[in-house]
Image (tube, rainbow, N blue to C red; front, side):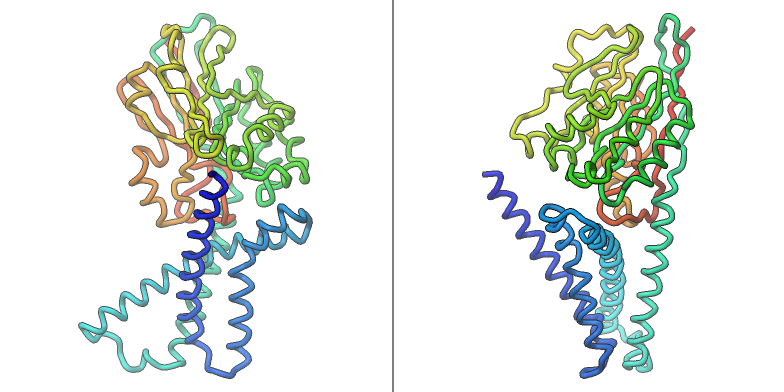
Length: 384
């Protein structure tokens, strides 16, 4: 049944992508006269770029190599470029539709020469966006947050948590990026490191091939390195992903609770997409929180930031999530704001503190436009 569902979903995605690609192509080709070499080059390059990401995903499964890496990089950048070309063309066509009712476009702007200026202008804008977005994506900021939990913890007044979500280790987040992220985390001298899911980017093969687990082993914190699953661990196969992470120094909490030094709890939820990929529901919040000593601080890791009200009602003191990437590319942040109560940042609900990270890595296009990747440092204080 899941195979059939996947095939249906894949067919819909390919169909929509093909139709949108044809739309972008049909507008772009208007800048090149028929029979010219430039028109032939445009057709060839557009088809190559359009299928490059699909080729990359196939090659990663059949022939993981430097060739598949090249196609992955080209295809991933093209996804971002295609998205912004699509937005530009839609904006232009809206103006053209308005012009049918209210003539606002001068005759001089309807020539081949102007179409060519418009084409190269659009290409320049998109290339600048890609360059800026890529530079932004590889330079995560350190986001600091001071939180006080009104509970007394014997022998512990302060706790420094470093929270990193959505690393998406794989082909695009390879050894250099992963090492850089690890170094930035360790530089904060954390008491404990929490990883908020989507540590891996779907397929485990590129992670193993690039030996990215060696970087994870370098994470250092006296109270340990603790992680949870995200939807991408389940997409690639949660069992193998979790085993790999645990073999490389990450304690994975899967729908369970651990107590750290008898001072505070950490609840680790399975990702809410577990049912879609594994066919099994995750535990309910009530089941996870049952029997806890609410005199101790309770920290919850839940990859997708849903059910904030229920978490507050159940006495969670701090909940931390990721998943949204805060849209990753503008204007998708408006979509994530519409879906999630908190798309990014801090919110207090009653006595509960909630933080949703924009993530330190990224999925798909290796660019961030309109928001910053981040590593979150939470300076947690308790009552004297």
